[in-house]
Length: 554
Ligand code: ATP
Ligand code: MG
Image 1 (cartoon, protein in one colour):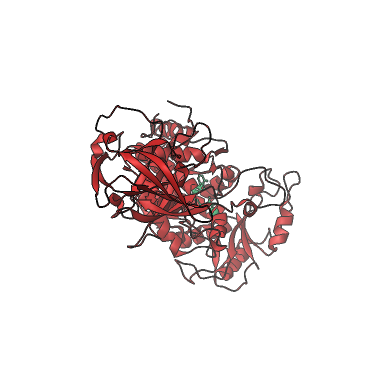
Image 2 (image 1 turned 120 degrees about the horizontal axis):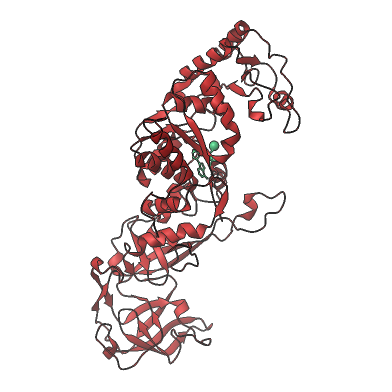
């Protein structure tokens, strides 16, 4: 499977290639333009990977531009987190811009439109504007304010700017065509009055440009050649081109749309993700169950795995839903060779090895990663008392159960064969511990061939093992047929997190946040950055070992 290169061809690449070949473009400049109204999610990672790698492949540049033209929902916390996430993904922007730095130029271009008779101040209310707009079958109706003179419009627009009107009292609209089959061309609003402090420009402005007017100007001002956006903007493209043309921008960007990424078992809009945080369905934006980049990072995903995923899903012209398992596939692939393979017991059951000397502690040498011997070996301790997994013992075994049960012998991974002789219970009948014996002849690596056992189980030495917490995650959103009138909140999985207290090998005692391991039989785990303390390590399960997913490529 080809996952490490960006050579997968896509239709956008073909356009860029052609533009360079025909001389339409001398260089390629792309941008990633997030609105700082939330943390980035995996869908943004797709757009980031696409924009940065596209420019990079053709020797071009990519700007990071905060599309901060809406003062109401934006916040500096988001500005910081977005930069952190892009850098962490491994991309470096050429320039960092704020769209709000272009407010002056946007204003001047609006004045130009007014002078050309291409924009007018309208007194209709928002509801009236909507009503006048018409719909797909009915043409719109012209505003009674449409024929105001340029002089009057200039005066009114100036007054809007000077704060002489209340929010919603007046807007500036482009003057195009109320009977256009494309509703976006029916005199769209381009400026509105909002008396709110802006995180970058403070109280300097009380009129703000609308997205559809601002975005093409931002692209043109920065000399963006290919402005890549998601499919829902396809119908906005005629207005995008209109703005660039009528505002007489020197540089002419080309808007190209691609399908946004949708994933199963989650929600992907910042608005919904914010709701999950605000209503305490999750801890924070970086909760390991969140599809945010910071959540995936805290969960234990690597930048490589996310980039590879984004490349593999490719760029298409029609929307589809990608299975979450595809993302999981890429983190397994990435960690397979990198993560040390160690043992952790998540639901402990004590085992006393009755024929093992009381005070003896033995050092056993085991490989760190059998698939990558370059990772070397480590030592683990073995002594009279160990923990095994509760699930690895059955008092009354079901057919084909090859793990531990009374009278049965199993191999302890990297150590000895043990045989269960006695089950110790409390008065209520709960199992307290097992009494086993070991066979010294069967030491792992000794070449013992005397007899075979069918089951191998993992364990942690009770004397030197280290207590740890394990957090197992399940999908945040339950898939299934969505009923009418219900929202995603009705499909939140109430059991999306399971917290367990168990033990890890002593070799992991000094692990640091973000260290990653493959726990024998349990999957890949990451040391949590928020809840880990000097006293206690907390592990997030990134993904289990098994996958039923097949990418269909070899
Ligand atoms: P959200 O609904 O999550 O707020 P958005 O599109 O409003 O998403 P922006 O901050 O405006 O978020 O997005 C920045 C860029 O990321 C845009 O160019 C947008 O097209 C792209 N993007 C956002 N979501 C996705 C997605 N799911 N898949 C691909 N690209 C996306
Ligand atoms: Mg948005």
